Amino acid sequence: MKKISVLGSTGSIGTSALDVITHLNNFKVIGLSANNNKSLLKKQSGKFKPEIIVVGSNGLKNIPLISKADVVLISVVGAAGLIPLINAIKLKKKIALANKEALVIAGDLITGLLKKYPAEIIPVDSEHSAIFQCIDGKNKEEISKIILTASGGPFRNYSKKNLSKVKVGDVLKHPTWKMGRKITVDSATMINKGFEVIEAHYLFEVPYQKIEVVIHPQSIVHSAVEFVDGSIIAQMSKTDMRLAIQYALTYPERKVSTVKKLDLSSVGKLEFFRFSAGNFPCFELAMTSAKIGGTMPAVLNAANEVAVKNFLEGKIRFLQIPKLIEKAMKKHRVKKNPNLEDILNADFETRKFVEELR
Ligand SMILES: NC(=O)c1ccc[n+]([C@@H]2O[C@H](COP(=O)([O-])OP(=O)(O)OC[C@H]3O[C@@H](n4cnc5c(N)ncnc54)[C@H](OP(=O)(O)O)[C@@H]3O)[C@@H](O)[C@H]2O)c1
Image 1 (cartoon, rainbow, N blue to C red):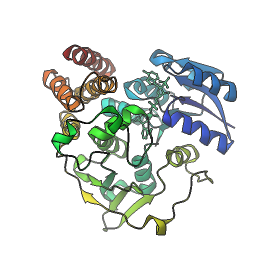
Image 2: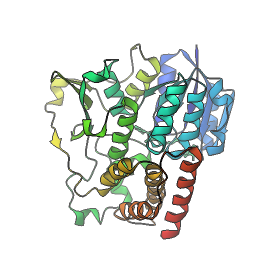
Image 3: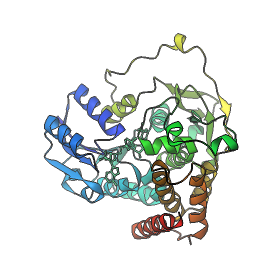
């Protein structure tokens, strides 16, 4: 039995992961974590009997939660994923990484640590799991392009006028995926796709010019890789995160899963369109922050986290999300080559600034 800690066990990825772990039957859950949902955490603890249970972002700093596990699944949402990711790398763990915000805000720091400590990150995000499977250990020089697919979210064909009227309920209806509330809003603003471009850049060490976003409304092709000879290898499956979670846990092996198989003839057609950020300034803001680098991506993320929280609480409108991020980015004085403290300071200051802006 391999020992596993599931960080963010009460979330959308966390609960699916516990389903996968139950199905695989070769993992012993030794650690669980949540933020507020104590009743579900109690239920999960009753079933899996972990030796370590923590709550809140301070709980995620617990070292045995990570040191005692063979595999650490990081499926907390937001910047809270950064400290456990750094600790897991320093403790040379196998890390199944769902949290994307940590790589966005501290990509250089994380990749630097990975060069120093022999930890292993296996992506859980469906697009990155797909890319990981397509690359399959091949030489990086053979990759000519990463093709990151995007469903386009619920408002792909909305005009700016229509976007100004959308309500929380409209945003939470993602056309193809069922996910946590924050990432569902991020998908609707398309900042999620910007985060994913940054995530792909760091995970696969591919320059930004070689990452192309393509709209694929059916979400069957989870992403693809074009190689120098012109071949494109894509990964396809039903839209069910349990597949990517399971692959991250069983890699390099594949095991029978509970996910329904894809019947290609019943899919009928697969469409692909060129992506233009158009009415989705959050995507451009993410790309601008990546280009500027330093502490700017931490500002982008912190401003987005506060704006999304306020939107979900009905305090601001949908189109105010990019406006708040832009204001925070304009105000920030970038620190190049930031250390952890610089990143955490930028995160803290930005949260304060955006909260006060409203
Ligand atoms: N859902 C998906 O299909 C999907 C796909 C790809 C990537 N991801 C990425 O995976 C991560 C998790 O997404 P999700 O959709 O599963 O989110 P979620 O449903 O909102 O779950 C988040 C989990 O993190 C915990 N948490 C939240 N804030 C925390 C904090 N400050 N400190 C400690 N724990 C905290 C939550 O606890 P409580 O339940 O107690 O609040 C919950 O267990 C995100 O980074 C997301 O971008 C998700």
